[in-house]
Length: 87
Image 1: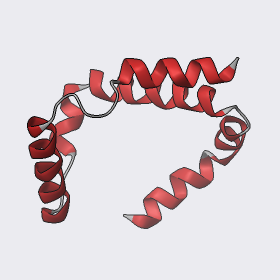
Image 2: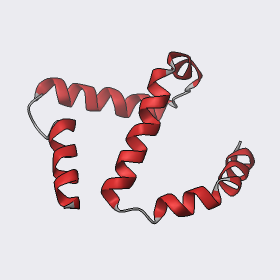
Image 3: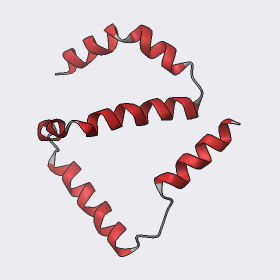
């Protein structure tokens, strides 16, 4: 599996190099666009395999969130801060 990931990254190196030249807010917007394309494909989630450790961590985070849902910042607030920092 690692070899396949390495080959993909190697083939994408020129594109990745260009993306890494972008500002942090621009890179975050790219990441958001990529994530949105992944979540739009509902079949993608069937292929994701989480380890027991990852599942345990996500369960812990979910419990913490349910105990205090107003702690932290919403994505809307975070995105606004990132985009305003670009100016």
